Amino acid sequence: MTEIIAGLYMSPLEFLALLGAVALVVARWLPPAARPRVTITAGAVLALSAIVLSVVGIRWQMLLVLAGAAVALPFALSPLLRRRTGQPAWRARWWLALPGSVACVGLIAMGPVTAWAFPVPVFPEPSGRFAVGTHVVQWTDQHRPESFTADPHDRRTVVVQLWYPAQKSPAGAQRAQYLGRTEHEARTVSAALAREVGLPDFLVDGVPRAHTHSVFNAPVAGGGERFPVVLFSPGSGGVRTQNTAWAEEVASHGYVVVALDHPYDSAAVVLADGRTIHAKIASTGDRDKDDKLAVDWTAVRAADLGFVLTQLDHLDRGEITGPLTGRLDTSRVAVTGHSMGGAAALQAARQDRRFGAVIDLDGYPHGPTSPSLQQSTLALTQAITPGTDPRYIPRLTEALKLSTATSYRLTIPGAAHLTFIDGPLYLPPVPSIVGSLGRTESPHVVAATTLAFLDTTLRHKPGDLASVLSAYGDLSVYHPDNSR
Image 1 (cartoon, rainbow, N blue to C red):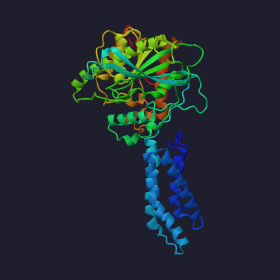
Image 2: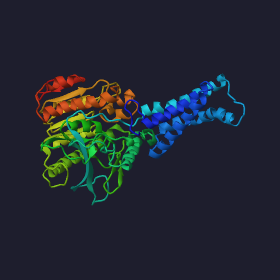
Image 3: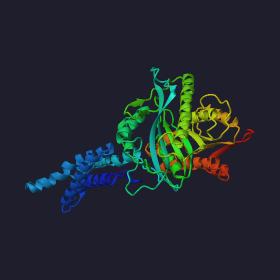
Image 4: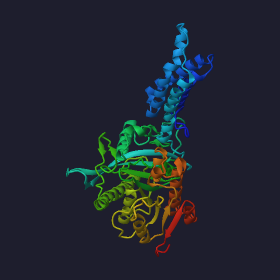
């Protein structure tokens, strides 16, 4: 009863409360014979729903519904109480009652409207042949000091989440919490993400209520197949779970997706011992200073990506305990990222030839453009507008043209910067924020284009990649001879 109905953006229990509240207001306008039955039934449904919701956790949107019902309740009950006590029934004239009823309906209607604007995200069903499992690990690089703290003994630690092809779980298996291993972690991360963008946490209180399609620590898919690996770095302030819909879709097609939290950069990182590390990096407002800082932050992220790939090698060989021992094909690895994570992916690929392909999700290439990329690269960009940084496309084009492998830049019409993450699933559908592709199409486009690229570069599947990509937007192809 608490599962959100896709398209309705409310649970069955919330919908019952909504119907009860509306019926309570409408009862005043019914014929006298029907009024008592409707009032009593509506009041009972509303009261029971409110009690259960208060136990399981009530969303702020439902408080608007309950407030509208509370205002209407005395006027709905008054005629019934007067009749029971033998007092003459009193009823306000329609032209006096109508404004109050309209106000109550308006307040109640704000519930579903705001639930639509700030919903509990409903994740698309992965379309691949595999079920999806997920696993969280924490690794410390003993050879790298933590540059964000003054403690000389502090070493760089990252939290990593893997999504992988899994055996189908039994019906009713608990699906993984979104944003964290526990509801507490999910709420901590959700509140930190809200603060990053200047929103009150209550507006997005539906986000940590969501569950995904993956199952924590599910058995790996049978058959002994070794799966290509895709590393992912989130945007500035972003977290490892910010692209869960994409990760689940990619994993369902036979890849292992490995996403990182970058402590002191990610909005909130909950460590295994329960400590929470909040972001320390912040924009200064000075573009030149911010560019220099971004170069340093990108370098830290690139080093994190290289370290995690080394750990995955150890995991595959059984030197680290984990569910994927012997199932990772670390000879076929792509590095991916969104925004600053995209810049880190480009930088990591320049420094580490173990990465065989690169995907940049709308990331400005911070840092040097040399040495040249030697891996095939796919850059997905938002629709370019007069407000886009004029340096972005020229800088990105320069990096792709210098590559010694065929690379692609795909500009997707209707996309915004947050189109490339889970944002369209739970943020208001405002084109300037999440683009105009919609809650269903946004994750589909990102997954379809990146999967086509991964299948070509890591699995060497035959086909015309340029033709597939060009169906989704304006494509530029950069060959090693720098021709388009």
